[in-house]
Image (tube, rainbow, N blue to C red; front, side, top):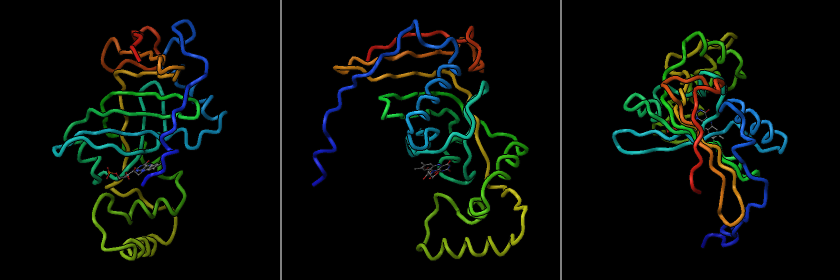
Length: 220
Ligand SMILES: Cc1cc2nc3c(=O)[nH]c(=O)nc-3n(C[C@H](O)[C@H](O)[C@H](O)COP(=O)(O)O)c2cc1C
């Protein structure tokens, strides 16, 4: 039996999000809410669900956004993982930042494209050594015979690169999601939530360009 307390109803008694107070650009609004998530000590506020669609259907998992800027949202991963194969199949993706202690979510749809190898290298070099070795060691999304096999792969990768710098594996990289729509969702009492969606007026609109987006309110 699952714990029934987990299903307790939460009423969202917090200020709403009105057209008169939302920022002019999606990036400014995202930055404002992200600041508030940090201030509220939301754990890993850069964590986002990433939805993809592959030949076998949809899939969703959490990844960490490493940049949110005018040109999109960047995350890093194994380029031979299930998600990477799905993105190659269909580069259209959806993202969801859920800041539940604030009764907020930010939903995005867009298109993922690989970031340059130069950018991957610059980010890879900032990772702790353990994470750089893990990028070599872990055949992400593939079956393992047991934890021992993973430990062995980590050991071998560490022995292969005993000294820094550790090169970036060819099978590891990042994606930038060019956003075409971004919705700011604020929970409100009686399930009458505020939903303001910015839709790009043209493909590739910069997230910091207030003129490039049309704002629509959606029913909750
Ligand atoms: C909080 C959190 C952060 C994560 N961040 C990443 C990430 O940045 N990159 C990544 O490849 N996987 C990350 N993962 C693991 C993914 O959710 C997933 O298990 C992994 O990428 C394999 O997904 P796939 O088989 O669909 O490709 C994270 C998981 C959690 C819970």
